[in-house]
Figure 1 (cartoon, rainbow, N blue to C red):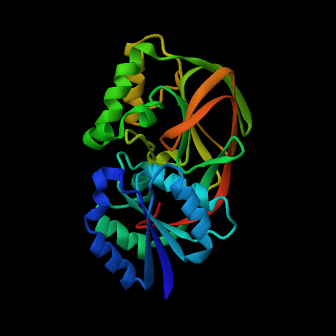
Figure 2: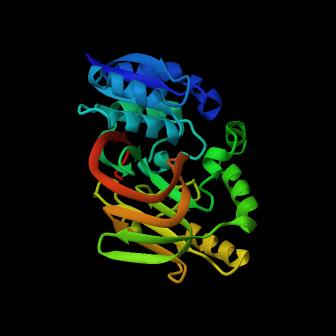
Length: 299
């Protein structure tokens, strides 16, 4: 029989992994897997366990938020043999789940994780030695995901991000940046920049199909917001972005395999909702079809 590692973050989603755990294990059994369960105790456990156990299993299924998935992928990027992935979302925003079409019902998600269609997935390399699955970002709203307490995110969900983001609007900092991408260069003052491989960012910004988003085309989608003249104008810009309307005077949306940012000062980044550190220069590289993941529909 095939072997499956169920990697659980017990702190995600108010400990929601308990709901439907028996049915989840039964779904794995029905799909022909013998299941081993492992829990993470602290930040850094998921990549360590994934890297150490990759060669011993035919599939690794992680249970948690986007951060848990990101850490699991980061662990697999350390090894040559990478088993297929499954993902049972239990987090706050679950951008990756939205992009992959995964159910928030653990029982349904476990069926997909065990027997869904497996597709290739691009992975982002950040500054040489770190990885991200769906977004690397700087500027407005990016600190919310890793500075908002977990209990507040669990209680308020996406609204916690919105509330915290709005509270920061009067104090937004704009950064001059030189942005080098495939075939071009931009230089301007920006309040936000995101390098993504997702149709959903922070559960609020959704890139629709006509933007041309593909998870395995070897290209990032890059969203840049220039500095507006007022907070009121910024609010209008963000409202338009949520509605997939892009004011070209203030918003740039492009695609690129690699992208380099150069700043005058160090700028804080977030990687898949976690602290990415401060950098004056960053190179993001798309690693084409780096891992494989089970999905429930065409993406």
